[in-house]
Length: 509
Image 1 (spheres, rainbow, N blue to C red):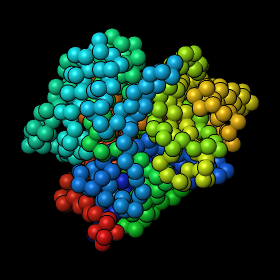
Image 2 (cartoon, rainbow, N blue to C red):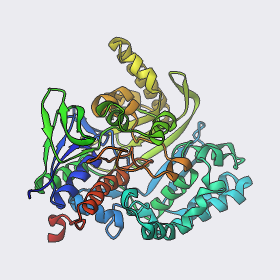
Image 3 (tube, helix red, strand yellow):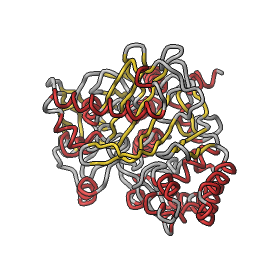
């Protein structure tokens, strides 16, 4: 009997990961990608001499000797991807420019700085720092609990093993550390520190995730792509092709073909039909379930999830090519604003600024790319997009407002801007088809993390899902692991051992 065939919808990280593990385990796969390049939201593009990176902000587990690094090594030549330690996770500066605090690898310094800024919050500060220190060096930081078996094949032993591995982490599902960052921040009296804690990641996200990120940074396990995140994506694509995988770009899927409650192929918008033994969607969850499958394979849990769960807010990114350098600046900065930034009906109190000073690929010598990222509303931008002139005017107005604000922080910058690029939620949707332009799918909360989302759909055989719609929180590791999970399920069901081979380029070194 020949190899089983597989169709994968989407060449983002989850789709590429699925493809790599499919090929390793003797399935014959082909990826159909809507866009002309791989990566999904991990996107990079050129504007003149400037390289705009709109994708991965940092890579968790970029150093050898960790579980997630081993997984990277299976699906790409990770050693060839140039990475730099992210020694500072975030630098916060207040609206007067007289107060600032850096979240670096030095936790002792962070504690001193916090106490100096807010002696009235000593008890809570010491408790916060203690939690960070308790996780520094923990294997959980570079595994993230994702290496456990997916729910479809998890036995009693797997569940007990997972509970044992997570025993030190269970406290974060109760008490003060189970609260959102915004709720937890209310424990602080100092207004500056209260704002800092609220916005360290997301006001709605759990504070324990913030603690975990700071511990990961302190452990030296956050990396920055010196050549842009596309170097990572392309390495995975090359690995997939070297294993015999195929990709068809500019291939928009119209529907999944189902016969006798079995997925047997897809139909593209050009009318062509493609058949396979297995279909995997690594595309947007809502459009997969309710459009490609016409909502025929759902249950109450799925309906509730898509009706009530919050997604990460869509983002607008204003990237500037400027004729100056920022050698001593942190790669990620937050500047509190005296006057909030107005976006639709939303007032944004902080200006988040990425500075691409960690490689020489982003701009010519003596120049830089900087990028303001702001949370915004989907409906506002999708409505604006119906009138192209108004849409472009609003983008230009926002860009000029942000340039004026940045000029006050970096005097003279206004006259140094050479390129302007504005990416809205509509842009994200247009290139990725992600639901409402969300960059990372389901928002990570205590309730969403407590629910195990299957990689399958009820009543439908030979169909699987991968990506951040089946594992809340988004990010690189979750996307990759969900693709890996699909093949673990398939190998178990087909009665064969799951293979996860390191890249031959890695082993040759």
